[in-house]
Image 1 (tube, one colour):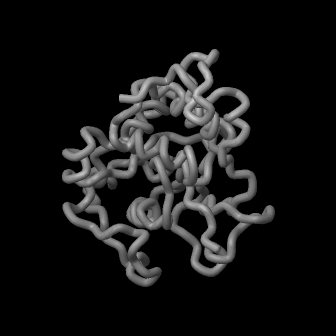
Image 2 (spheres, rainbow, N blue to C red):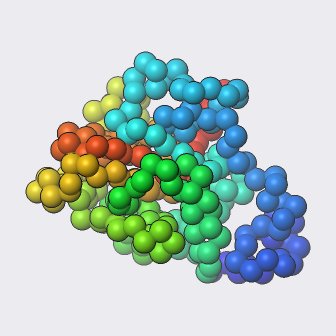
Image 3 (cartoon, one colour):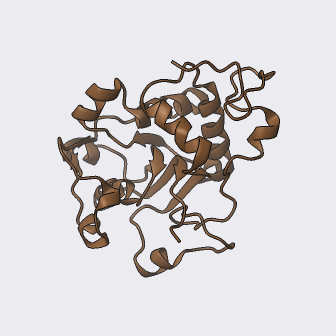
Length: 228
């Protein structure tokens, strides 16, 4: 387990409870300032929708991520995935800040964490997305649906697959009868730690939209940056 009494960048003693970084180092974190409003892809210049979303829109409506998945944020998320963080209050503050900034006016009705495989749960001891959803639910009182989808036992890594194979991805098994019980007017927020290709969230959004769900958005801590 990793203690939180020193800044993770400069190792200076922290004066703010539950923080991972000192105030000075927080300003150096890879916050996303320019991004696609549809898929949250970090961009070099301000724009409304990236070229990919203009050509092949995702099934989800909007996405937002706080950080680029690089540097200390990447390290921090690795530690979180491995269940090595003692204090999750900083993650909770980041999540709530992102939720309030981007989704508060969209009147979200419920949270759905992106499922992990049984193999991953056994290895890590928790479902990272479900842990994040619980943190956000504690601040917002939004209900969490954890039994609508399950991840198949073996699915290849999204980052190692080409665009065409990702398009027909079947990582998740939908539990259709449970999904059909959701009100059609539901406004759902999918939760995950990192969005890499967007296809995990897209697959779940595709099933939800096919069932008539009105609105599906995505919130993650981090988003992979543009590859140059």
